[in-house]
Amino acid sequence: MMPYSLPEPIRTEPRHFTYLAVAICLLGAAFVTERASYWTGHLQSDIHRASINEPVPLAVGATRFLLPIDYISTAQQRRNSLDPNNRFETLRLSMAWPDLRALTELGDNSAARERAIETIQVELESNPGRESLRARLDPFYRRLARGGELSGPDGLNILTLSAQGALKTDLIVYDPSVKNGFIARCLREKSAGKALCHRAVVLNRGLEVRYSFDQSLLNDWKKLDQAVIQKVEDFRTL
Image 1 (cartoon, rainbow, N blue to C red):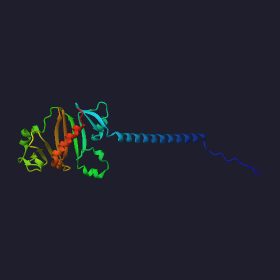
Image 2: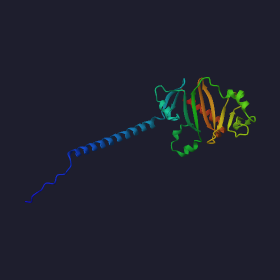
Image 3: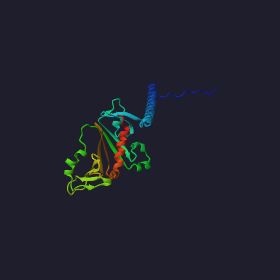
Image 4: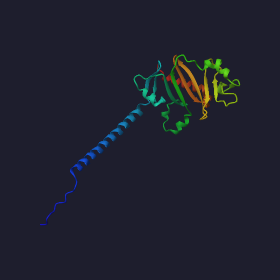
């Protein structure tokens, strides 16, 4: 019979196995935590995407609205709109012209984005008693105007407020055929060179609707004005 010899003892201390076991447990716990965090976030994201177009009730001053969160411009105001006491003094919205959908509805559809010629920025503000732009037309803007009135697109008149000899970077455009009708102020940004027009309308007592748009859309000012006001009215519940 051949003699058997026992293997040489390994020179490893028992506590090394303890350290190894603890390390394996910690790695396993970290993996489980990471996976749980991933799937929780994924589920919350799915819930968020599924519910973001659901209209939420909120108020601007004393006026109540029911509108999809997607229309709200800022992340902070979107979060605040979900609070029980979601009353705003000013609420900022964004819409895609010409169909006035929420910008996020366009997604990555390049064709849809091409059809969305411009972004319309809308502000709903609780501001009772503010003097309208139209009220300042005769006593203020006509006196500041240089070079007399000019004819503008689709029946509008134009007053130039820019300094003498300067480029026409500050304009008042208004509808002369209707008392208290359409009026907007168009300013050209010096840095970007883009001209934006700003319009303000009193929707009801204490609520003002202000919106801004590219000056090139003045050719469709009647359609634009009616569509924006109607969109806000569609959201209003009181």
